[in-house]
Length: 203
Image (cartoon, rainbow, N blue to C red; front, side):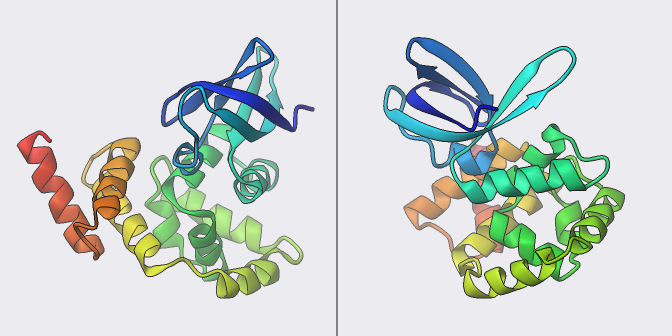
């Protein structure tokens, strides 16, 4: 099992990255949450990995935090009908903390807004993860101690709203992050309005 890669970042897209480890290039598929944390191209990187072995391929999935990888494995191993692709969509659509809070609170509506997930899949996620011994209790304590900041909550709401309007997840995520970085908007409503205005202006 390949548990992490340490080398230099060769290239990165919102969905995948290539890491040079001793002259060997490894392609790893990543969620948006990890893409945000990547260093610059040619910079040193240490990325946690999960190796999925299929009949036709060995696929590496990469994560910049153990919390992301733990949630990915929990989804893939314990929720029926959830494969690596959907697990990455979950991590790309919500922060780990927000997702855990949604499961603890049985917030099916919030989870079902994630791109690629429907209401039935969201219900199955809540049902099957809450049934895991100790998971809900541990998450409840963690979500109380590490509740997402107001800024993170507004960003998540804005991204989900833009996805619902037909924008691609990566595009919505980047646009909202850029606006928050510049401090141009605070509320989810303002973020959505500004993104739509910029998209219409072609910026």
